[in-house]
Length: 416
Image (cartoon, rainbow, N blue to C red):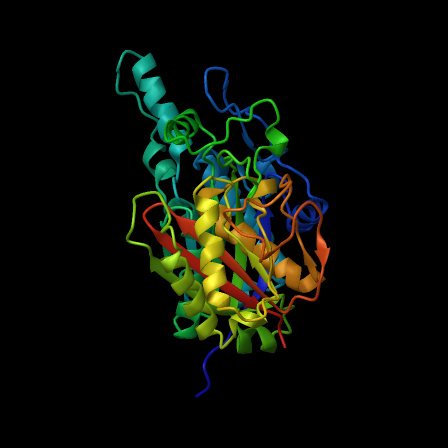
């Protein structure tokens, strides 16, 4: 029996530069920055006063009143993106056995905004225990996936992943593997995050992880540039409908790309820093490409993790250089967090969407704000800066790395 293939048949996105896949892609190609002064709270006393917020989000477009009342913003972003992806798939899910449809969803922080507000109310009310009855379900990290399933009656595999900033790539990998094992025919997967809160911004700022370029937020995220000073927080969510190929073929589905490889490793080096030589990143990329039977020199595009931090941006290029092993390297590289900011647990899936779109449109989205490449990174990699690049893309790889040493890789291939 031949191995089951896994294809992408639906996509949805809520991002700082677009609340649907088309707008997101168009603005990414144009090099639009999503950074602005924070509006979710008054940032006046914070060292970092800006972030990449979602703009114009209206949860009532795709969610009903009770769904909104009972969910944290991170779940609302995820549910909206999932509804988009499900509708985009063009499939009547009600015609299927509900146990054949699963949801594997990820988030790094879950309902932090809800928890933060409830604790603030608790202290403001003289420590009287008057908590919202929805506090616990709104705060839970598995609730977005649970609510997606509840909305549609999906009764198959359902769980959530947490691997910090590698989270949604972990979700994608797990979904791929369960489909290949024959445990599901369709899985809605991805991740969502709503981390622009006082505690989150304050905590990351205390770690000196965030850019403090308050006078020019739109240029603050500048991966690989010698003048980079930290990452810019982002928020939103993204969803993919992953489907077993024969099932997709039988229903005449539109197939955006094939997911041919995925992997995870751990650096086992430091709580928050990547391995300085990128050993875990290298092995994760190698394993993902090996699974897809792809030579590293055949990769056309790598959407890198590149967060615009002084140390983090150095190790990944070393891993890529080792992966290519001196061979002719045709892979173009870009850091799209320069536009979206860092969506933490949702970063992997929105960058997977850009990777898939690069295959569909033969365009590499740019790394904006980068004026020159840090000499510590080297000048031998094909980093696309300032403007998008037209190029045939048959194979695209999306890289994510997270606190705790997590490395998550997804490899997509033009469907044929």
